Length: 116
Length: 111
Image (cartoon, rainbow over all chains, first blue to last red; front, side):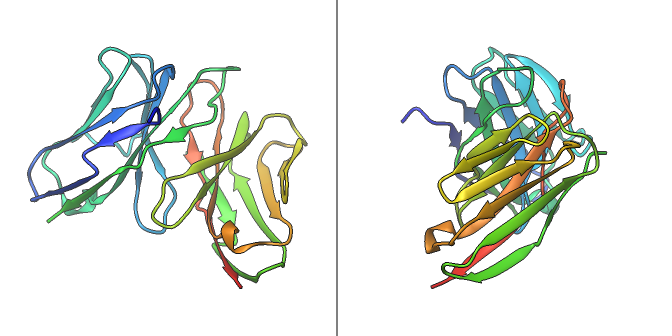
């Protein structure tokens, strides 16, 4: 399968614990996005990378959230000191750069986080 | 900040009826994309519109981008049960600006 993959698919953690999610984009895609989605809502932008550079970050991304894409390939999203409000589906997407704007994004299956 | 609203929030139609969802941005967009998300699934890309006033068709689906590049619509002719899902528009104001997804329209088709 050459699509976007995310691991783990499900994560249950206790409040206050740290969690890390991984996203492997489609190999030739140079842009990688992270979103958060709660039930009945649209995907909420968190951050995106162009190669290894983090170009935009939502102000919703508090200092407890950090994302990296060290070699311009896979990316990790870490949430420190999780809170119950962090419970959501975390989606990763990737795309190719073309035309100077955001192009078709291919989404992974997501990581569902439950904070108890 | 940029806001993207969609109406209606929900739509129930009889199979065979038409369906339209509207997307409105608080800022001018460089481009707009449409995605479909089936229940329990992830968003799947449908189309991208870039030019002012652009109209694109995909079989029973017609997409429009407004002249001012602040609104868009998706129209489905003769809905089928396979059209069930939530339809999202997503836009950016360009450059390195973030992508903002709309609030979505959930379509239910009654056979």
